Amino acid sequence: MNEPLTYRHWAIDLAPKAAPALATTTVLILGRIWNANGAQHSVGNAALMVVLAAGAATAGAFSSGNRSGGSVIAGTAFAASGGLALAGVAGYADGLSLPLLLWALATAIAYGLAARYWRTDRREAVAHERHREEHAHVERVEALRAGAQIEVARSGAAYAEQLANALITRAGFPGFDPQAITGAGLPELPVKHDR
Image (cartoon, rainbow, N blue to C red; front, top):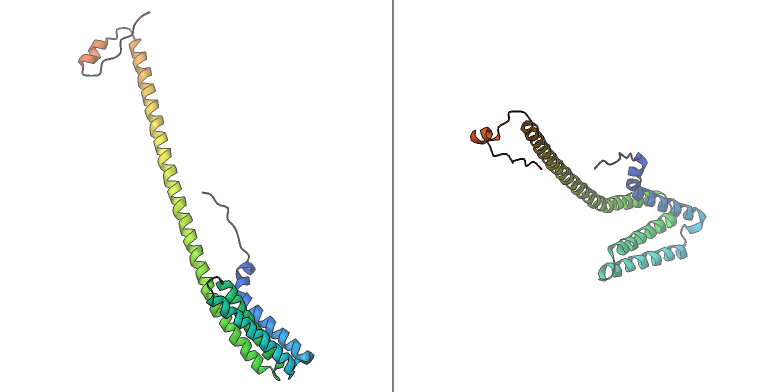
């Protein structure tokens, strides 16, 4: 019931939100490094990237169309295809404007796709937290109910013990007449037998 308070660093919350931008920026930087090292206007390098991107897209299509293929595998294959296409354009293009345009487009698409999963995760986290709170509430109510029953039982036992002590003490007084109590409408007291 008493859970420790935890503090999460802001970087832990920010890291998943920055991942799509970091991924597309890394691909753009690697493509521009490749461009500076001779990939610019290289037909062989462009053909390699086209074949790799088409292969990744084909794998994603087969994985999404197959019943045994998972959505994670298909998403990874399509992301790899997009990344390879972005790297190919960044490596082959003359200027920086086309690679930057594709980088912005790829980043926007990545954030659009990631937002759907973030909403799903958030919904599941909220539902889990509500379930935990409801369970904790039920536990607290049951603990209060059990405590109240214990206190009622204790007070009843204490009352019975005090009543018995009072009757025993009163029976020991000189001049006590149990018949007078019975005649007044009170329950009959047990008769004390002398041994």
